[in-house]
Image 1 (cartoon, rainbow, N blue to C red):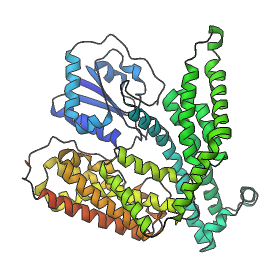
Image 2: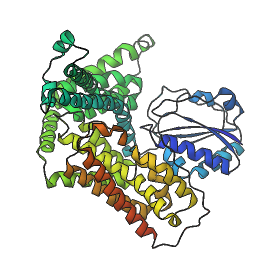
Image 3: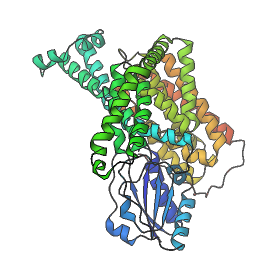
Image 4: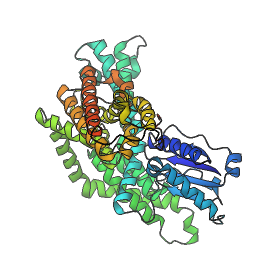
Amino acid sequence: MKFVAVTSCPTGIAHTYMAAEALEQAGKAAGHEVVVETQGAAGSSPIDPAVIAAADGVIYAADLEVQGRERFAGKPTVDVGVKKAVHDAPGVVAQAVAAVEAGPVTDAPAATAAPATKVEPNASVGARIRQWLMTGVSYMIPFVAAGGILIALGFMVAQAAWGETGAVEVTGVSVQTLIENFNLFSGQDWAVLLYQTGSAAFAFLVPVLSGFIAYGIANRPGLVPGFVGGAVSVTIGAGFLGGLVTGFVAGFLALWISNWRVPKGVRGVMPVVVTPLLSSLITGFLMFVLIGRPIAALMEGLTNWLNGLSGSNLILMGALLGVMMGFDLGGPVNKVAYTFAVTGLATPGLGQDAVQYRIMAAVMAAGMVAPLALAVATFVRKQLFTEAERENGKAAVLLGLSFISEGAIPFAAADPWRVIVSSVVGSGVTGALVMAFGSGLQAPHGGIWVLPLISNFAGFILAVLIGTLVSAALVVALKSTRKLPEQAGSEQPVAVAA
């Protein structure tokens, strides 16, 4: 049979592409042809309409609403989460075969405004909240990446231009001075330009977070009140905590107002005037008058607490975040730790020694350990792994170096407790060491590709190396206690780099 498939995940980085590779290989192994369209962070290349027309069925392995769903109207369809395709691609292909054999479909799927969050109708409250939150975070991350890297580059150039006081000097130059006196050949002016541009990108973090949480809840009607609520949160000092609150408040308000039954003459202006006007007004009133000040006080207390951490407290925090990063390798616990680090970047500190930057460095380093450790283990003790796992080990090197923890998922799926225990220990050690060494990072992603932006990068590399060796040694020791696997096994999907 011939199938077309679409894969997507909230962040659009790893699971999207791993699911695509898994489906293609599972289809080939079963004697079927699977053509996949990845709707990831890098965009998507739509499947040729001729290929869609010739397909017997459709597979959706997506945690976001599929873009252009109407293209596949009338074909037998299987709709699963992206992780299902990563962990059990043969099962998903078998479901698709069964759907085709069950007969044609008469109901065409309705077109939806992408990229709305996909939440199953019977999903739990917790699942819905997580999906809405991840929608906001996934759209915020590019702003964090651009702003954080530009600010970090600004500090680097400032230190070269001003010396040790560069991080302070660059923040003291006004935008007006930059505009009026910019010199193309001045390192100081370039430092200010980089810093101010990054700061401008950072100014969007909370509004984008709030706006797209509201978008996930109410679709397009949630955008305006969500962005307005996020901007109000910044104005009153409520920060990302306020953005989280306004995202949900604005989303539910917009959803409620959009469902009002109004006369036909008013329907045309509801989405353009009435819904954004009323939902923005109510959101602004709630933040300015009722809940904004308590949230701002809570945000100030959290910031002071983080800035007051030092010594053993920071090391313990690094260990805890490392354990969370290594626990489920891109799952909910991992995402909580990562989101905590990324949202911390929304309150930039002075210089890369700020606590929030050290937290980001600890989280990134810990997230690199599991795939690197499994790769090392497959190299040094090949007989403990199947042929498919050894192939996964080769891909895991690039995934680990690029801070894609999901590179260890195929190993964890085949041998959960040994791999997870090893990952948790090694990642926890790495997180603690990064904090102890004082490394800091303002970029939310990139792994070794943003190494020049990491303060005390030698300590960062050493922490990753030690954690990788600890985790690799532990997984080899644990696997040595079990019966050797069949060497011919090739059921597992081969991980691919995003």
